[in-house]
Length: 498
Image 1 (cartoon, one colour):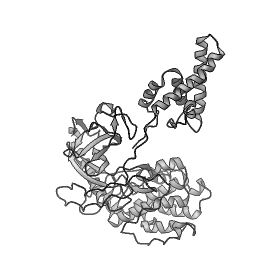
Image 2: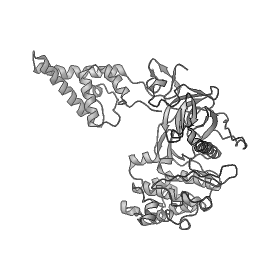
Image 3: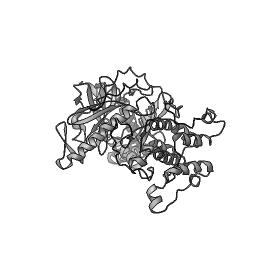
Image 4: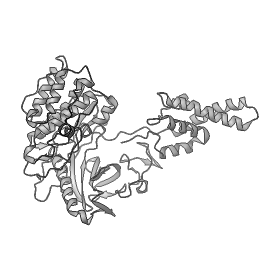
């Protein structure tokens, strides 16, 4: 365990770094959040080893972890900071909020059971097991590699109609699968559609089922209140009997609006209270067909009866807009009835390098509530999953050599110009070194002069002029080996992430 890297959860730490991902050794004292479980914590009788914190929300924390059965996973812990505190490893509810804590804890367990019941669909994030320990509960799920749809749209700005339908087709399949089982997601948005990386591209999947609802008798009937400003329909928090598939259809249509226009739609509250109207997508992007706006406008109707009543109706209307020669449109049109069996994941969108084969996964150990039977054993993980790929170690000796080359080049020029005058020569060399490196760092290659000479690819992550200036100045002024350690601790270098 001493050589375990708590960043990638692989046994590869030698000295102070992981030879696989290049990150520094993480210890319990490395974390800024002192109330989270420290790396190396064991759960489930030692079957689970917790790594570093991946993220934190209002109701829980998510860690990277290694499970003895499933390998590297994401482990979600129920820990609402506003309702509880951590004493040792235990999560203790605040006395005044004990009832609320217990209700939210039941909702957390309900979320795990609901996602696990959808395990057979390839476009729903997989939950492997749940456990109760430390006076709280956890569930282990698939560790996703990729980005959310919202992050993808920030880099792409706009998508064509064909690209948007291609990305949403697996999501529509997953929603049809849920609706056929009397389940609603109730929180569809670009943030909750994850573009999971596969060996050949992207496989979109649904995540975050904290607001989901199921009418099945083996689930609680409670519906957590949630509202996403631009994507939630007006009936989001209506009584249970007034909710149905049109609610998810509104949110999916609003997501499509954002994908093709790059602008979030007017919220339902603003439309009802202030009388604002939806701006047609053709106003934002002139070349989009008017028929697409008619489909989106119908899907986002304020009255439920005026929307599409099933995902199949929405899918049929979208497919009718695609060019006949398009491979999606030329395929067999979907049936107007909701599909019960899950469809295969959609064709890739962006090619990515092949990933290592996934090791065989044993049957999961899902812990149902005491009054319920254990759900069916989930199928083996989808082939989309892949363990973290080892990264090439950073070549610090070569970086130091690049710094020495820069000192030799720039300071020698200064000393030749100021013969016998040490202080002007040093100041001039410092200025030349800083200026030249600032220029080269701001170029697309984002590398210093010495790194360019040695053909090193050590870019600064999202460089700004101020950051590049400080980096250039530090390289010119003090030994690079020390600068390297300082900049890594400051997070300037792009250390490979899991």
